Image 1 (cartoon, one colour):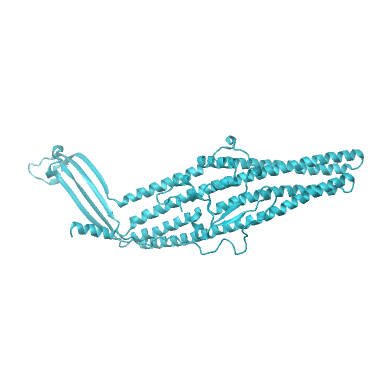
Image 2: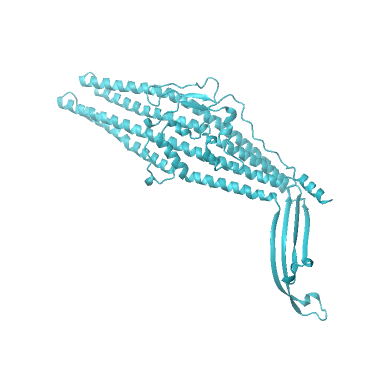
Length: 498
């Protein structure tokens, strides 16, 4: 067989790769995220800040910086600071770089391995090793100088090397979307924590206003006792109500401090060094047009789904690797160099030495090891496929849950606004009646308690709309494909675009 035939045969052998070829699973065939008629296209509206109607726009794209829709410069600045300083993001970026370099290293197996060797030795040999030969010295010295180039190449006859590169590329893709998931989790947590901080500030403000009103009422009761229109028991009851309200403040302030510490950790700062601006609900705008991705594209948007798709790809490639390990391994090695007893003669034509070796290794018996390794790889691929399916189901569930929550939040806010207004009107009426002697103090206390509960519940209902709006953007993938800053950290195989 001539040289051309050898090259042709080698090319033919490397043209195939055993094992299944990966194909990304199709998106589920479903019409939406909820049963028909369960989710309205527009939520209820309430005439107060944060009570605007929200509309679900099918097919609407998600901006890369989706948090800017809340129109808070303080929030935008905090997230930029977090993306620059978060150790979680730094670790994910380093893991991605490691995965990329591992892929690049494995691609080196596509090419021959070439090494150079230069050696010089001097050795003493015993003449006894050659038998009793007259005239042979009992021992003698000799030099040997060698310079050579060694080449080794393993033919990827059945695609085992390519499957290894494929598996590592899939791992790099997994790390790419792990980085995307870290971005999404970090930004979502910052938005949610900022909303929680704003909610706690509003709850503290409402509680302080209620306590101030109760203090005013206590002063009124004291004057009535002096005038003989109330009893000492009324004073004690009002004092108890006031102290009960004041007792709620330390817990709220502690929770507020914890939220501030959480923000400090998210932006990569120590609690004592954190200087972020405070948040309040009135500084946030409620996004009114909300995206509702098409189910056919949704699985491409979720970083966790893409992660599990990459794991399935990796597991599929491992089946090919295990299959190739059961087949012959073809290796070609060669060396060319010079070898001489004197360095001055090292490069004489007579000192040329070379070797050319072709080897084929076929596993014959390994106690069933290779067969069972392949079966294990197949089982791992089946497990990866099941995990991918479970992740897709969870992703659809997340969006559906959030859509129901947003609709319920709007209805709850409308009802809670009416309840708060009714409680405020009732309290004002009962207090006026008490002043005129037409109501008992027990009625005043009951009205105060109802209004306090309604006021705090209204604040929580407002904050919940903001939080669940952020949860929808997170559930839909966060628009990572529209962010240029991620593309700079992407892998060779993943350009950061859908």
